Amino acid sequence: EADIYQTPRYLVIGTGKKITLECSQTMGHDKMYWYQQDPGMELHLIHYSYGVNSTEKGDLSSESTVSRIRTEHFPLTLESARPSHTSQYLCASSEYGGAKNIQYFGAGTRLSVL
Amino acid sequence: GESVGLHLPTLSVQEGDNSIINCAYSNSASDYFIWYKQESGKGPQFIIDIRSNMDKRQGQRVTVLLNKTVKHLSLQIAATQPGDSAVYFCAESSLSNSGYALNFGKGTSLLVTP
Image 1 (tube, each protein chain N blue to C red):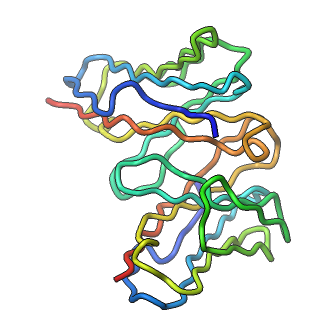
Image 2 (cartoon, rainbow over the protein chains, first blue to last red; image 1 turned 90 degrees about the vertical axis):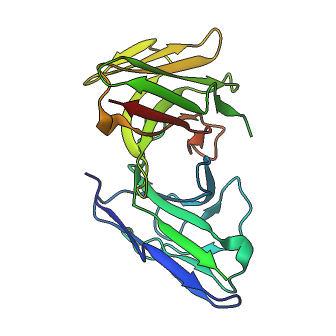
Image 3 (tube, one colour; image 1 turned 180 degrees about the vertical axis):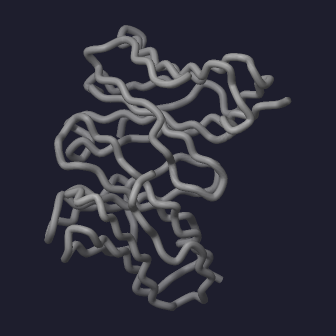
């Protein structure tokens, strides 16, 4: 069982609100990721980090931002939520090591913006 | 980016039968492949992986086959059980994928009937 935790599990919020989705892992992994997943669809990478103070944008453009001040913590922030942000957000981590890149996922945050 | 896709969106099998889930990829530079299982309301869970220098790898009740010639991999589940009902994703990785990030295909929903 992977030690990666996401909070909240579910969030319903009004348009224009600022939100932060939390992600923490206790495995000491250097690499962390955020994916966006619509119901029944594939995962799309929106952000990733190689380690502390490293953040990169993924393949899918996102209005969210991330920070990596501590190895174990990789929060995602939306400054002004919109209905188009309604989706499931999945956080993952992996050991930094190149090709063999097993990512361990949290349970996800299901976000609904009204 | 390169596409990773699955041949069938849904697969229904009887309990006790063997299941085969297929995946096609298009990136000839892919050098690592991984299968995940995602149950309803949960994050993806690692099942098995394979490097491009192998054509077969076995785990507990699961086998992954890789055919690089036709860019195809499959996941075989032996003696399928009701607990195997989930969505299965294949993913590929290469150095060109944002530093070995995983590129996920569309999932196949496996339904195990009694």
